[in-house]
Image (cartoon, rainbow, N blue to C red; front, side, top):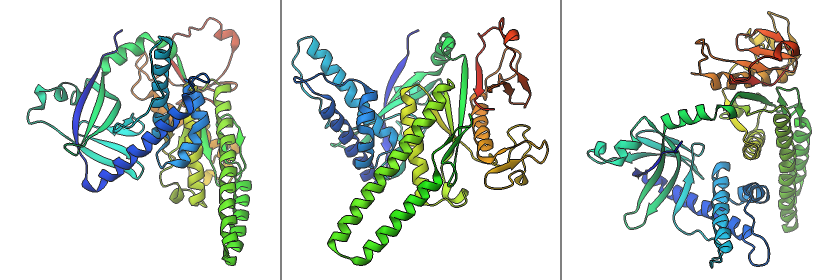
Length: 433
């Protein structure tokens, strides 16, 4: 089926005090693109790199450190350069003259992760938080492409490009719109690719294991990370008292060493999470929402908030390479709810790491219990609005030894009874036991 995409140009009303944030975001976005282009373009001495995965693996950490951009904008900058490099390689194969891509035109690429699109305004990610921009609409928008596509509920926002007109000092959003009906028909056609959704839940902790998954994997050692960080802080404190230039240089070197060590630990943890997801054929990974995590999580400090966000970002960009979606869900009651019977009470959690349901007496590690509840929340969201042929929402959770639906009904897996079972119906699963 033809993919009907329409591009609409709309002027933005950007608050004066936030214009500089967008200009700086553009500068850093182009820095990511040009750095990638310089790294990827190796003609005529070697083959040019046209793999997005290789480019992200080689440059993502560096560009995250060199800029203040969100993970998504860094990825978009890298991918813009790789796409341009691919085009250059194609021209070389045809015998055309070309050179290393270079980006200097004012533009930033946004998708639905780095921007929130509404019918009357857009929220754009910048290096200094989000900026809300109203659309500047013509007097009679219905007679223009803005009314036909931008304001039309039959079309949804896809990837968009922000540009700046220096002559008028105005920002414009070039929004790519797609018919939602076409996407629905396309998803029906491609139903063979979406027969099931399997969710891996991840619970994050300030002590014990850094992360616990709904498959029962205990990943990283938060206690060791806290201990190492305190050692670094104590050593830096002693050096600061000296006040010499040599001490200052040593402190900076120690900060760099500490940062590299932390990054390595978080990369190991994100790789382990990805291994769990891939080993269990997961299509989604669920984290708890990290907003205000320092207020919600007892004992969480600025260090923990930074580590959790970086772990999420590492997992997100790596998962994208394998077509796995990483999303956040509300953390409300995930530590108090019994993942077996659903009974929710604050007394269910006996201690930091012990969970005993007051109703069904189900007992397990508290973090493991929370990870399954996190997975379940995303499962419910994925099924929201989807109805089976009988009118009910299909909702099946895949466990190690059976299936569990959202009503809490457990069925042991029987290979004999499954031999003749149809696999045409889409299912959604939570990985766990």
